[in-house]
Image (tube, rainbow, N blue to C red; front, side, top):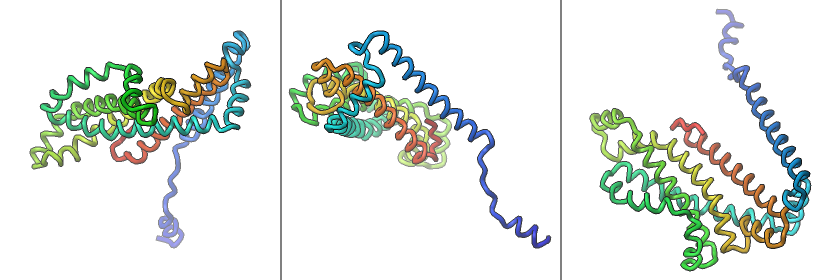
Amino acid sequence: MTVASADASAKPSVERRPPGAMAGRLRSIGMFAVSIVAGIAVWQLLAMKYGSGLVASPGQTVSAARELAADGTLGNSVIASSRRILIGWGLGLAVGVPVGLLMGQVPFIRRLLDPYIEFFRFIPPVAFVTLAVVWLGIGEASKVVLIFYTAVFIVTLNTIAGVLSVNETKLRAAASLGAGRWQVMRSVVLPSTVPHIVTGARLAMGNSFLTIVSAEIVAAQVGLGALIWTSRNYGRIDWVFVGIIVLGILGFVFDRVLRIVAARVLKRYEVRV
């Protein structure tokens, strides 16, 4: 072997992306941009057709957003709503996952708790807004509890579905190798259930945004729901549009961050989101 060939073989191989990967990424970005531009164009046409009294134009909405941001109203509303959503959603995740794992693994507990899960999950959180305010007051607790109520059943049901979908052959194989209940849970059940948990977490996040508006309309002075309701009282359609659009952007960002974190942290579980 010559020195040149030895040096060439000693050089580390450079990992290259597939030729079509960059083109596919650029295509996705381009489609996203086209979609946004088309949506804004349709919005502008609707505003021109129905007038600013019914539909605020993109320009009016941007001006209203600047106005609300200048006096701190928009920033305070975003922070307040985000805090309530993250706390309530996080509590729902912290309770829903272990309860779902337990119900999925232990038939007795599943039969014991299933009637309550099936009963309460069909009652919308907005039905409990008045009771939450009466029992917990107009402070943060009532909003957080309502969001927790929204999230916990979704996460629990998705976790149960993940546990029950585990291949029976894998469970028997682990048991035949002498694995105990905890080892089976950690090595077989949990890896198979993680994708269902992530899906439940994403669905619960979306429903948390639905709940925060009704909760803040009834019992909050600060928040995006309160901003939308106050705007309605003052007849400021442009403020209403600001609140709605910011809610959508915030939800998009939260979901995207959740997907990125899940894909990286839970990479070994082959989570695809």
